[in-house]
Image 1: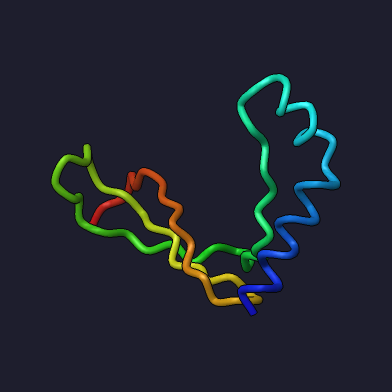
Image 2: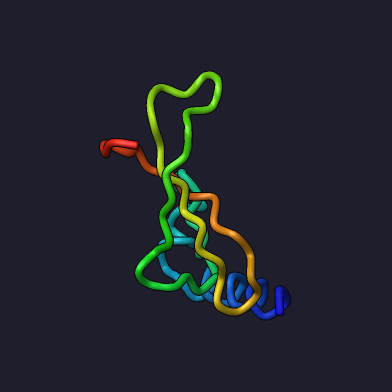
Length: 79
């Protein structure tokens, strides 16, 4: 199933006008071929060494291939 996401990434990137413009005017724009569920599955975690404060990590998985998201955001709640 990862092949399907890879092919989707290539097709969406090459058919996107912003990609071709970004070749001349960086930063490079590339599409993400993964399909993420909505709403995202957020979970808070303790701060890692070097991080400033609490964060939430996105624990969602791609619907097609199962790749885990590496997204995060600052968490303002109470533990």
